[in-house]
Image (cartoon, rainbow over the protein chains, first blue to last red):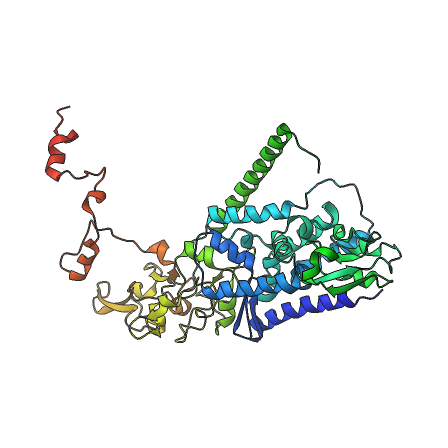
Length: 268
Length: 264
C-alpha cells in the first residue's frame, strides 16, 4: 500500500487553490479567477462548460472568450481527463473524502434512511437548465457548494463553511458518497463528457488476490464490478480516476493505462 | 431492469414530474429571493442588472484586477446575489482608473467595454461609466445649514460638472451665501468619492443604483423648445399610446361613435 496518488491528488487540489488565492492576494498572473472561469498566464481562457450552458439557458449571449474557454475544458476532459475534475481539482472532494474516511473509521454502515438514485444527478443537470431558463439566473451557480467553497477560500470567508459542513454531515450520516455520487450535477456533467477519455484504470485478474481493498476505498465502487471476474479497463463513466484503488492494491492488479480507443469495444 | 406495466410507468412518470416540479419551484423561489436586492453598486460598464445577474459567471477576475481593492465578491451571508462583484463607496470608492483594468478581462461580457468606450475615438472613457448616482440628503448636509463645506464638490473626479455648487442667499443671516452641492445625473458616474469624503457621521451624499432613484418620462411630455428632445417622438406610434387604442379611426370618429356620445 502506498499513498502516491492520494498525495498527488492533494497536491493538485491545493496548488490550484493556492494559485487562485495568490492571484487575488498577491497579484500573481499564473492562474486568475476561479473554477467558474479563469485565465491561464493572462492569455488562455478556461471556463466551466456547465456554467456556460446555464448562461446560455437563461437566454443571454456571451463573449467568444468564454466559449473558447469552455471548449478547452470540454476537450481536455473528453480526451484525457475523464471525470478527473471531481478528484483532482474540485475542493469539495476534500470534504467528501474526509466524510468517507470518517465513515469507515466510525464504522457507519448500512441502515440507510434515505434512498437516492445515482441517476438523480443526471436529472439535476436537466433541472438546472430548466430552472435557469425560467428564472433567468444561472441556477446551479447560485447554490453550488463547489463555487461557494472555492470563492470563499480565494476571496474571503463568509457563511460558506455552513454549506461545506452540511455536505460533510450529509455524506457522513445520511448517504454514503451522497453529494458527489448522487446529487452534484457538475460531477454528472463531467461523467458525461469524460466517458470516452483515454486515461483509465486497468484491472488485471491474474495478479488479483481478491482482497477487495479496492472496493472498500472506492467512492464509486460499482465501477469496479469486474474485480475478481475478468481483466479489463475500468471504463465506467463514474470513475473519477482518483487512483485510490491503485494505492491500496498490494498486488499491483490495478494500474493507470492509456486506453486504445480504436480497440475500445474489444478490450471492454 | 424489470419490465414496467403501463400503470407503473405512468405512476413513475407522474412521480418524477411531481418531484421535478417541486424541486424546480423551491429552487426558482430561492433564486427570486437571491436576486431581490436592488441596492448594490456594480463595477463600471456593468450591463443592466437583470442581464448582469444572468451573465456574470462569478469568477472574480474583475475583483482581482481592481488596483484599489474597491471591488468585492458577495459572500454567502452578505445578503447580496452570491458571488457577484460590488463595491461599497463609503469603504473604498471606485477611483475611476483611466485604463479601467476591471472591465476588459471580464470573460462573459457582463462588463461591457462598449459602455465605457468613446465611439468616435475608439478609446476607453471611464467618464461614461454609470455605476450609480449620488443623492444629497439636504437635511443632514451641513452646506444646507449654511456652513461652508464643499468637500464632495472637491472630491469629485469630474470637478464642477458632476457636482456643481449652487449659490443661494442665506436669509437667516442676511449676509452669507449657501454653497449647495447639486448633482448632474447626466454626468455623475456613481464612483462614490463624494460619499467617501463626506464629513457627516452617516454620509449626507450617497451613491445609489440609478434604477432605484432616477425617474423617466415617456413621450407624453416633450421639451418643445429643445430640438434634441423631439428625437424621442420619432418612433412613437400614436394609436398604441392611447388607452384602449382607437385603431385606424380618426380621433373625431372615436369621439362621435364611441361611448362618449352615449346619453346614458
